[in-house]
Length: 309
Ligand code: CP
Ligand code: NVA
Image (cartoon, rainbow, N blue to C red; front, side, top):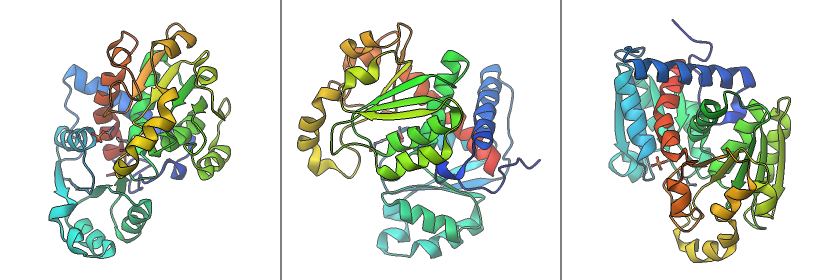
């Protein structure tokens, strides 16, 4: 049976409307429930996903591979260094070749443009497993985690701290689609790109609002979710020291949690640099849902795969 999203790419949440995003979220809830009850959900028997990785990954790689296995298909890990892309084979040729062997292509790379190019030439759906600009598979798992906590997303306040990076951009998109309030506390020079704020205006559903502030306390005040990500993303290693200096006031710690709602939860996409963007205490505290969030990557990815492939 084909879903309404059959054949669609998952490159950016800007390509999704609220109903489509909700479809994925509902499917993730259903597939997680099936797995917990031991009910088989082999929706992709005989199908394969080619998974190109140009950057390191623990969660995205393993969760997609296991998701394909649980769905009855095969996830093929392909390190870009071992593929001919690493020796300069054009992406448009790679796209057509891999699409002739598999029912979907996942890619994690630096350039967002490269993923758009891959999608243009691939006849099978392309899934963005993170670029320098966006991390849309992460945002679906994050929304699933918040939904599990509160039973709703609409009107919930998510406060994001630190670097307005790829993870922040996809959270902006997801909050727009789900009617959430998002406040990003970022110092000057590290605010999310203007394009993401413009996307939010176009995508926002009733209840959604966005603010970018420089005071972390103002962002934390009354929040339902405190969220942070690394200060130095993959590819920015040379800037690490400058970034630590610029972002050190934006750490998620016990003082910030006190300003949030008493039942607020703490999220981080991982990997974390403990005692930099988040304290050890916050990762391990009773209000942390960070490892549930990581697990939810797999359930969310199953929904994306089952819906698109
Ligand atoms: N959060 C996330 O994408 O983790 P990995 O880099 O380990 O895939
Ligand atoms: N912003 C981080 C996310 C890692 C999952 C990075 O791009 O490295």
